[in-house]
Image 1 (cartoon, rainbow, N blue to C red):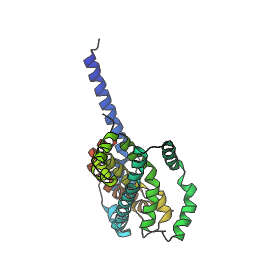
Image 2: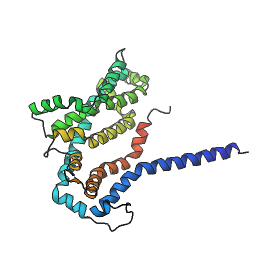
Image 3: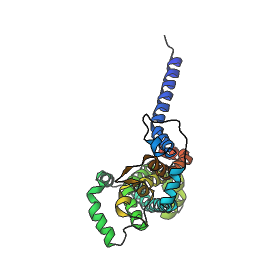
Image 4: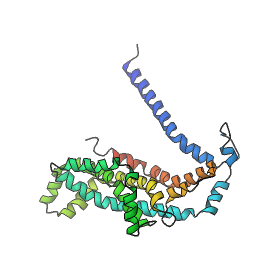
Length: 277
């Protein structure tokens, strides 16, 4: 008969093995994309796929010769960070009012906000395109910043609202008794307590903005085009050049992957904020 200790050890090993298996399955497409970026087009189309080959940098050199990578990268950085800051400036006061001054319509409002994420973007493409054209915001960073903010605002508000709901109201009431104003209450009490949750929300918003492709492809052409538009430009009527497409995808994904890897502890801490009391 297996003892309880042996059973728990076996369960731990099984869960660990399963976790590594899932991680490898998720990581494999990224690994294969990076590997293919160092192949020639002939090696990229080889059957069966080649794991061992002579690496080359010709795809990366071709990208730099054909397009200005830094221009697209700067657009992605400027748009993603600006949209995230604007989104947080709107979401924090909104979540604060709904979390600490809840009414019978608060829940309905939150559900309505979240339901807008279920709307297919193509369904509102034409009116938004016409609004952006009439406002002179086509192919501009400001236009994408506004769109990205509106697209991600429902999720950001929901996340911040969830973190704020886990904070005891007694802490805020104590601050009011000490004479704290509304602004001091938010800056000196609420934000420091919930900084882990807010940090994870900022990271998630950055990732969503960085990966957004639909609006960047339809509202930009060259001047304000981010890295997602650069990737799409390598799809041509002649077909897909897998090696070059993998190289440009690697260049587009690398910054946000590195940023996410560096910030993973803060992200996990923030996502688990309030889970254990």
